[in-house]
Amino acid sequence: MSINVTDKLLEIALQIREPWKISDVKFSPEAGRLDIYIDFEKGTSFSCPVCGGPATGYDTNMMTWRHRDFFEYEAYFHDRVPRVKCRDGGCVRSLL
Image 1 (cartoon, rainbow, N blue to C red):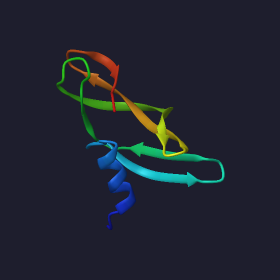
Image 2: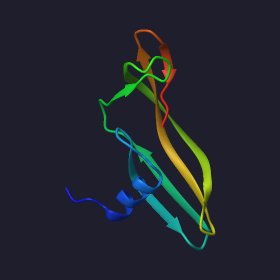
Image 3: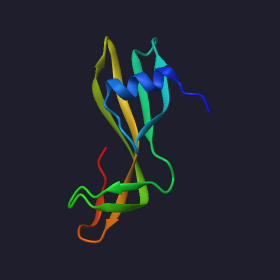
């Protein structure tokens, strides 16, 4: 498996840390747009955003939000955001 240098550079610049990773980047200079797709591996364990303990993801919802411009290009994040089950916190949405 080779490492995509552009994806790795963006992960560092945007402070995207495990279990999250950039899965795809689409750049359209004509449209003035940069789309960054963020994902995680199946079976990943997350930290519960309520109590901080380990939590298991059980379904996801695709979300898109606008980030600050990347130079003169609009930048958008697309993320498969999981809901997690926590022993103490119940069912909550995990955070990127």
